[in-house]
Image (cartoon, rainbow, N blue to C red):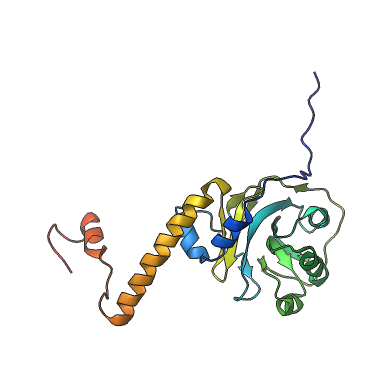
Length: 231
């Protein structure tokens, strides 16, 4: 009996509804991470080239060998407008996997942004272009284009497993990833949390609520305060 091997390049993935992407983009990454159970946030090593950068969209996942960007080019040839390239570059900083030319191509395609567990170059040009680029560093060395990898397979980036089609949202604080099936519920929770935090901030700024309502109860539960005792 023969068994076919799954292809290293999966061309078709299920993408999240653009309306959900647009709604998710309205929330800070911190709100989404909190209501998602404080999970899905990538390592802080993966940071935007400029604090003003923002992105939201479905993940198109790419696995490369350290220092080689062949499969990034392959993925870009298949990418659709709104996709976010999520690249497992193995954390290698010995050379850049992307630069101004590839970013210009991404912009022409309509790619929403790039999250890369690796280094990039031409950082000043990328900042001037305003393209959302999240990486662990910069290096002027260029990559090779020789080694096979995989596209649209699960990847590990910044300590988080990212599946093709996962929702990716990023801002100045970093990157958060949410499974598509959870997005509708997460958005409702995010709306409530943002409203609650807005009320809390208003209370702080007005001087009417200078400590959280839950503090004494949490301290009692932790054994810091006795029952009935307050600060």
